[in-house]
Structures are given as C-alpha cells and as structure tokens.
Image 1 (cartoon, rainbow, N blue to C red):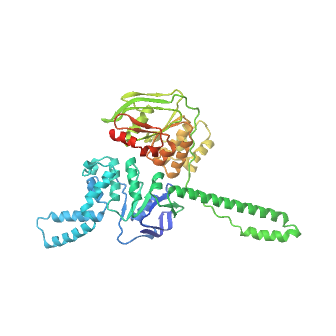
Image 2 (cartoon, rainbow, N blue to C red):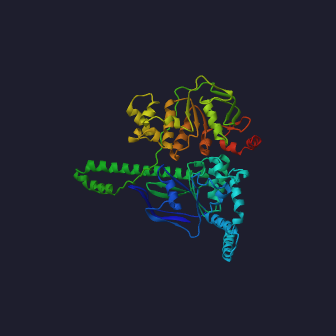
Image 3 (cartoon, helix red, strand yellow):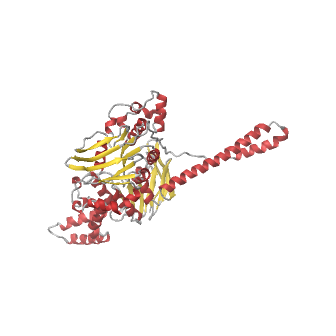
Length: 537
C-alpha cells in the first residue's frame, strides 16, 4: 500500500497539489489522469521520492518495494540488456555485484566466507537464481530476440531501449509499480502483452497514459487530478468519463430548476410587495428565496479544442491508386511491392511494426520522396492535407502563432482569426508565442489547425495523437469520425483506430500488404491475418 497524507507541492507561487490525501491498495490498477500541466508525471515522482513534497508525506507500507518506469534511455548504455533489467531490483543487483567481487578474491578470508553466506541467503530469498530466466522471459514477451539479451544497451536502437526499461520496471514482482506512458513506442503485440500482464498483476499499479483503450483494459480505478486535488473513482476511463459528464448534467439541471423557482419568487415579490393584502405572502416568499442555494458548479480545468474537418469540394470517383511501390532506406527495403486502391468513403488505418515503412509511404504519397519503383496515381479532384510525424520543418521561421496560422487562413480579419485560435486553445497572449519554442502538443494543435483550414478532401495523418492530451485526442477522434471524406492514417492508439477506420492495411516486411475491410478488433483476432503475417516475417 502507498498513500499520501496532506501532500502539498508548490513551485514558487504556483500550487500544483494541495492537501492531497489518497490511498492506493494492492490488487488495483489506478489510472492517473488530468489536463496537460496538471502534474501527472510530477505526482509519480512525488510517490517515488524523486522529488520532495512542500508539506505532508508519502507513506509506503514497511518492506514494500517500489519500481518506476525510467525515462532516460541512455542511462544504461554501458550495461548489457540483461543486466539493465535485473537492476530493476536494486537490492538483488547489489547483492549479485558484491558476490561477484568476493568470489573474485584470490585469498579468501573467514570474514569473506561469513559475508558470502549472508549474501547467498539473501540472494535465494530474492529468487536470485531465477533472475536471468525471469528477465529473459520479460524481454521475449516484449518482442526482444534472445540473441540481443546480452548486447550492450548502447548498441541497440531506441525502440529496443524503451522495451528494456519497461522490463526493468516490471522485473522482480515489485509491490508498487509506477508507469509513466508505458505504451509509448510499443508495437501492438507488446501493448497487448502488457495489458494482460497488468490485468493479472496482484500488486499496486499506478499508470499515466494517453491511450484510452489501454486505460479501459487495465484500470480498476481512476485518480483524477483537477484544481490541485486528486479524486478517486471506481471503474475504468470510459466509466469515469460518462459518470463525470452525467454528474455535471444533473447538477446543471438541478440548478436550472432552482433558478426557475428563484425567478418565480422574485416575480411574486416584485408584483405584490407594495400590495397590502399580499405583503404577508411576499415576505414569506422572500424568506424562501433566501434559503435557496445554487449548487456551485466548478468547471473542469480540462479544455477540449474544437476540431471539425470540412471539405471545399467532394472527392470524385477516382481517388488514389498505388501500384507496386518499392523503396529502400539506408540499405533496408521498407516497402516491397505495395499496392492498393482507395475508394469513396475509405478511412484506412495503416498498421504494422515498422513505423519507418508507414512514414515512407506517406512521404511518397505527398511527393516528398520518390519510390525506387512503382507508381502513385491521384484522382484529379483530390486535394490533400498532411500531418507528418516530424513537423519540425514547419516551425523554423521566427513567426508568432497568429502569423503562422494566418498563412493558411483565407480571411484577413484578426478578430475572426483570434476566434479560430481560441477554439484551438490558443487564447490571449498565447497567439503571440513564437512557433519555434512551442511544445510538442502546441505544434500538433497548429498542424491540426492547418489541416482544418485547408479544407481538403483527403487527410493523410502520420501518428497524429503523439504529444496530444486525452482531451485533444478525444476531439480529434470525434472530428475524424464526422469527417465526410477519405482518411489515410497511422496510429498506435487502439481506440482511435477502432472507432475511425473502416479498413485496415498492414505493410508487410516483404511482399506487399494485408488489406481487410473489417473493424480493427476483428482484424487483431483474425487467424488468417496472423497466418499471413507469420509467413512474411
């Protein structure tokens, strides 16, 4: 068990948390949610002891081990993958190192022998003899091949390091597990394995994630950060969202009835207070009026941008034909005879473990890259808007947000432009921020604004939910569901794919694609798809 007692955290004049009292118990998985800047990651650091409270305390049950998902992918470059995972249990790792050092002595003293006996007992109690086996199983389940398990961390790519650090956090069955965005950069299979792992986990888990499907699958409770407080709800993310919206609606309806009653009493008092025969009734109604209290509705600090994609003209019958595209990047063939045609009404999710393949395909479709062979043929009526995964080229000029958006706005009216930016959560002085220094989330909202203003009849979106908070993801999700034309997109967000796509195309490592017009969940469960995937791995 881990709990906070009157925890307050201040940075200068800003209070991030105030008198937070909350208890997390074993057997439960808590999804920690809140608007961007609410302090989700900071709260995990408070729980882990990485930062200190301004007042109050964090209490962990005696002898319970806490593990946290580390974020520094380069901290273990000089360690092997296996060693990095085992370092997740610091006590076990230190015992192993001390044992190695003692056994390396050329002259063995009686004191060395006594110390080794103690270490061996502790090593056995911590299940040390099974450590490499457990670590290896975690790594394999996360998709890291056995032949890499003893490689140095500095010699493996970033996407492997991410998985190693996750294995490190999970290693050794910690009593309290703190996970900050554990699904980032994981492939579909690794996410599905992690979901099952956490569903069956018997200890305490506290997780921060922007993946709504993940939160729905693994969470038994939601801990909501709002206005410097944390409130606990039983249930998963969807249950929290629906119940919070219902509670707000009921409160508003209750207030409306009270407002109507107040108006009725005020009218009566105004009409009859000067009338002697009615003055007694007017006085009693005035007393009734004074007793009516409107429930205070505190609006959430969450803000949902208004995302609405429109088209200036509908797409024609011919949209897009891709024939036998092949492309090699840095000596590796990432596209191998890729062919497909896009039809009216298609909203296609491109999936697969190779993110470079999807990004390369989108760049070819946008004319930013030339294929080695093959053809791309666009219909004459098609206009395209592109949301690239790497948008850095768009934000190099020394422009304000207002100037940047103005390039894509067809109305030369500052008031109208400010109104549009306000709906995209750029209000007040925010519009004069320089675009090179914007956060990842702010740049993503700028790119979504650009796509809306272009009013194209084809959207090509490469990982558009990266850097977005849950509120913006929800708005984007709804906007794409309503969009009346064709969409090609890549995403790791399960719910995003399931609710938007009516067609799935998986780019295979060799020999083309798998192309199915079925819902995403059905695609993931398809034995036929799995068979094709194995044949082409």
